[in-house]
Length: 210
Length: 387
Image (cartoon, rainbow over all chains, first blue to last red; front, top):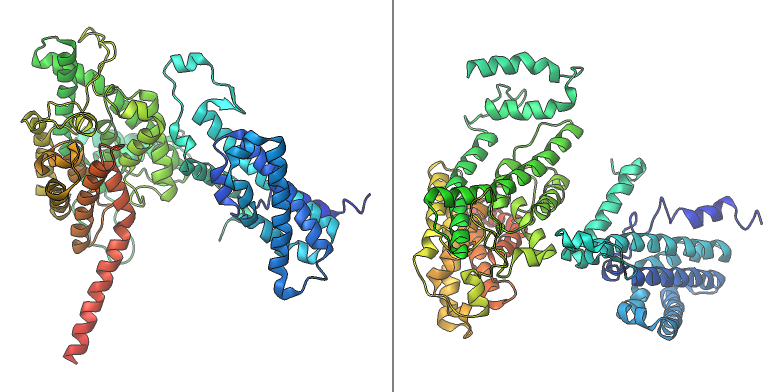
């Protein structure tokens, strides 16, 4: 057990969620973070889907990493990712149809998510299956965390709801409060994301350029 | 004056490092240099000092804005009394408008300057004076019924995200006042456009009377939705519904004269905005689609909406406009062209001036770059010919 969660594995699992977040530090996966975060529910589903796909594609590629010829490794990685994306997409259609309609093409476009290819190339190709699997989960959750924070503010301020439930009381609206329409547009997602990056860089001095 | 100077000198030590009011150092410094031209000089390198500094320039712009602001206040009262069917004296009308507009000016200055003071204190810098002008521009480019809390949020947003993150006054890419308006326009469209926001509805201290929903469309709004308004001289004097400061061409012309005579704004930018807008509108008259707004005569396009206001006070902003002399012509001309294109071809935005200026703000550095490059190329050619 101690080996299963050695220091290295712990790092692989936890640093992407906090200090080395794929979205706020490496600035990957921005397009989908803008596209699916106007409501909280699709953002959660999207985050979980990406977590499952990164984890299992990392696992599979790590198992076969020594047999993949170096020249065609990108194609092999893409085949694995594409297969997993198709599975996730079909599962969503079967069990969460409404959300999959809201996510529309963005589930299919997970295949182009830079985080996936980045982790396969940078981690799974040179590490064992178990730590690769943890690394995949860590990066997926790091991505999901940012998506959920962005979606939380956008849905709360843009629609006055959370997960579809009304949270801003009617008395506010009666007193003249109005939902912020800009929050539902992609530019505001970018600005919230920028604030998160700002916050993280202000907290971690070693992320700042000299 | 002497007494004021002496008083400032007397309280100054309190604000120095270690003084008991050190936390308000930037506030003190801001007011001191606002009242008196600072006597500090550059300590190294070449320095040529003009007698005028940026605080004095800002004050000239604020003075140039006053005619439009005062007229806007009168017009707010005029529109309210007209909608209420009341008769009022000049001073009642003006007083009503003054009381309706004053809270907006206060909110804009308190929020904007508050953020500036905090940032200056935090970064241990001097107060930057850029908000003097933005603070008065913001209430002038919103409809009178825009709620104060929205104005406060929008002002805070644009001071932080359009100015401070870029490095403060003089570093901003976009015009701060226009970002405030753009934020309001996209975030709260119901309070910024349509036909229910242009006339004040409440009675203030017994002046005017409370009205239920008054719907009055601006001339541009009419052209976009129902019919083409006939040209009349109210459009020039400014007794039409619209954002607070933008309606009167005459008051804006007085401001333009002040800016041009003092050399604060560039006549090249101003003129070319009008030329670009006029030409485009004329082209639409001659060969455009057969819609109301495309058939609107070119001179009507120029006097309606925020066109004049934008051309005189926004496009000429020295920070966000092109800086090369040739570049100013190109920059201004394209603002005029794009403003009219947005008005005519996009019925969703009856007013195109805000978006046109913001759009060209992005391109100003590019225009400057190519003007400089072509100048270099021209002179290189001359060099080789002479050899």
